View 1 (cartoon, rainbow, N blue to C red):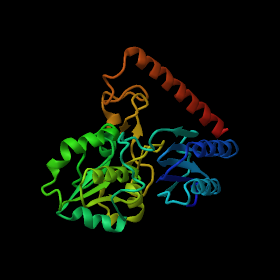
View 2: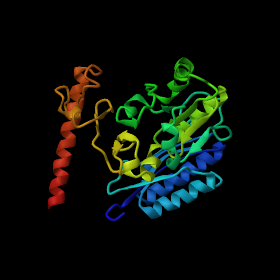
View 3: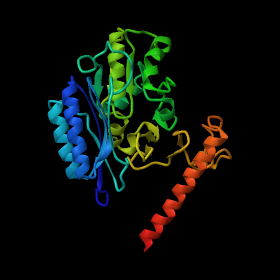
Length: 310
């Protein structure tokens, strides 16, 4: 990847992760960050590892080897792309109860989950008349892009997904025993956990897209691509297009929602201060703070530009 210095790796793995080992790994990674240009967001929990890291190739390779040791060489479900810019400010490591929060402690994705479907076989499965396709991501992610004819549960966060299953899934199933249920998400972790939930509830024929949308876009030629729109990612790039390059969306720095080029042309939009999603969410005092923050950002950009030119 000529001209692209940063390697970006998204990964996750479900495995029993002891608390003392979690602390050891966190400390080692923070030491690596101190000596190298390593950034990203990693989440550790007793059920495994989840996150994205960004660094030059040799640093990434070293970190992946370290993670493999702690994960006992289990599959880290790695997805790779590249960028000429850093996509995180620094390295954040969070220790939580779950590596992706669903709030159903009875399930164990490491031992019981659905059937992986590779990118090559995904199109055939979702085109099958006997298949329903469920997007397990949040509503704002779905709004940027999704697979043709997929069901949008319209959840604000993943912990709402179990309730959607209880309240609405049956309405999409003509025959509970025979219907294929195919699920997908950004990198594979949420749909994998969702399959574990459905299997515990007694559903059959449960499938999930291995590596998620990111792997599908990497593997699938444009002429065969059934994903429409852009794929939201949780870093500075906001969204990726079909070539896994930074897409057309940016972030509203007031509310954090992704906004399109068209959204920025709306009368409600004020850069760094508000967008049409958050027009009624903040007070005038909040907006004054946002306005002052944006002024400082703009001043800093001008100063940096002068330094670069000089």
